[in-house]
Image (cartoon, rainbow, N blue to C red):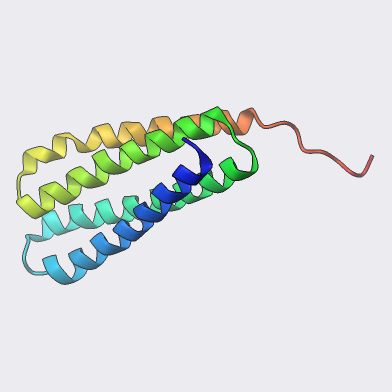
Length: 131
């Protein structure tokens, strides 16, 4: 994933995270049962957190392109779709069986964060001007 693509995805993820949050707060409040509303809100929280992570990764890619960051960004997006998407769908439809998809999104995010760790370890040591 290129830096510009990652930035575009981060922007769309941030926009949709806010939109889903507003829809939940104003359109679903009192309409769905509290347990499903809690699942929906969890989806929004993780959606927005990972939108910010994608934004940070896009900045990293503009400064120093790295294959592990690209891989991480792809897994972040996949996790967002699977985790938050399944919680949104479950809450809106009431079909609780959709919750079986959610852990696949969580695993995608774990892989994404592991790839980010690998990228950090592969950074060159900082240059010191004090020598």
